Length: 263
Image (cartoon, rainbow, N blue to C red):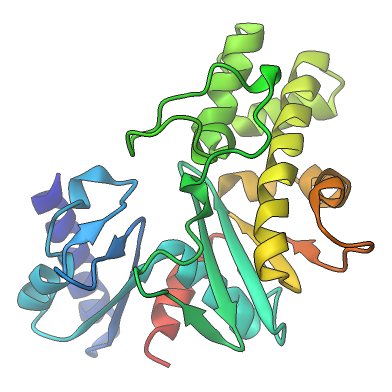
């Protein structure tokens, strides 16, 4: 509901300013991006935002300039400035949540790209599709087999249900796998292998020093142990120094990055 979204955002800003007794700058991270040509939102996982002049409408409601960026860009910026990737030259920030997104920070600056889609790896096809990955799932972007349809939280949940008939969320799959449940272990192993293939393609292009995982699935601690081996066979290098790390600022990193838009 776009109108309800505007109301919620403006209401939150108003409530915060009333509480602290002063007016602030406003930075917002969104699950999508703003078109350079039209000023309208595109590529949004929250589909009610697509085609809407979000920045303009919020500036009218709040009577001030708004700085707006993709939520994965905000996340990556936060972690690159003073988080897990502090002082790294090239950082790739990954969102593994209800959707799959990515943000690129080079020398402390967000890379947006000429089309405002830099880092959007989630809507590339999953590499090396095999029999174990069939049938390719439909994506809201009207394509099939997008990385997001395999690596988001709901995708892991769907995959586990399709294979084992259990309706479990990602956290419960992880908990049961840790307790020795072989069905959950198999689902997580499939997930790790797919994630390794997908991230290897990014590493071959960007060669980042640090990959920071964010979103709900970043709390699965085994990913940090297993991802190097899952990526390595697909990376065009004899050695891989790229580090895979959790976010220092946790669930707050995206909103911190939105605030850093005013730095």
